[in-house]
Length: 409
Ligand code: CTP
Image 1 (tube, rainbow, N blue to C red):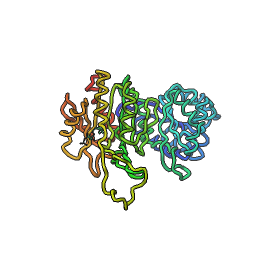
Image 2 (cartoon, protein in one colour):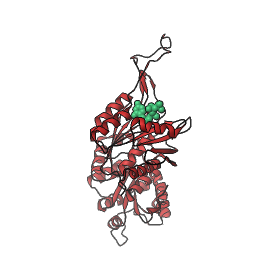
Image 3 (cartoon, rainbow, N blue to C red):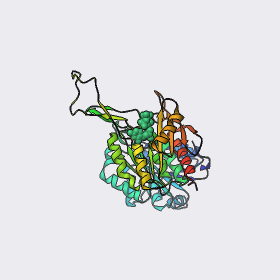
Image 4 (cartoon, protein in one colour):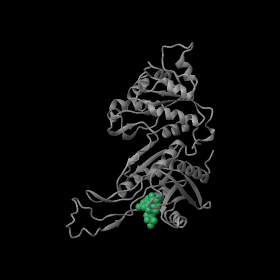
């Protein structure tokens, strides 16, 4: 969804040499659809993959592709003043290293060094190059300098191998660009939020477990949106294939079982102003998990003894309220029926300020697709948000919360 306010912004897309160059064409298109004026700068390696003519045809502007062809002006200086955001996508390991050290010997790095506009990089490279300490050190330097980073993600890489190093999708890049160009109201500035998300896994034996279908997508979306609104977030995340976006204000603590989740939450509460329980916590764990694999022939193999897990939300709420008067708590209720009734009961039973209800079933509620939620609180009648993507729902939920807390500026 493209916000209406996004016209008039100017982006320079810096394209460096990576097989992901073809996706930069889609980034250009999507930025244009958001009414953003796009111009392109390319390194000579990028031109080994796609010619500058392609970008010139799409943008309708000459491409800055050669430092040594004078058009009667100092191109990188002109470019650097003429934009609100420089997006380097794809950003190869080489260009990131050059940017980190301040080298400037091509159209993209000369512009990056001259500009005072925001810079967003979308790294794309082989897994080993991304994980190399040199690249990680360069990324830290860039982050510390205020450069925004989107991706990389895990998936099939140019080599055909699976790993971390795939460029973020054009949608994710444009989404990040829109948030930089038009940040949402900083209604969570000063908040320190602990969010639980994802499933928990309760081991039965070393290879089997009790778990559920949660992916953590909603809790991750809420965490990322809270960060955009100025909060510091600690995300206590159960086992999931999803990877929250890299950000200095989002700390991720990975856990597996409900007991680990509880311990991680308790360790964070003293500093926290808000608690969000979005995790699908297993209600029970195995009384005596086996240290070796159950065999079919075991006479007891048809019987599992379960013990109840502590209610993390209820425990955290009580503790937080004892620590600070203005503490604020959001719970979730995933139900197959009677959503409002169950959500209201959980609001009271667990002492939350708001409960976000969603209907779940065989094909509903889990994963990253579009969804719909019900906001249940004591102050206002229940309200449906959506259908929308989880990231849009995250934003709508924080708008509601900000309203309820009276902190909208
Ligand atoms: N929750 C929690 N710790 C638990 C169980 C649930 O923190 N051990 C939180 C969830 O993160 C969610 C809310 O409580 O925010 C509701 O979770 P749900 O599983 O729907 O509630 P239960 O209390 O387990 O109720 P029931 O299973 O009977 O629906």
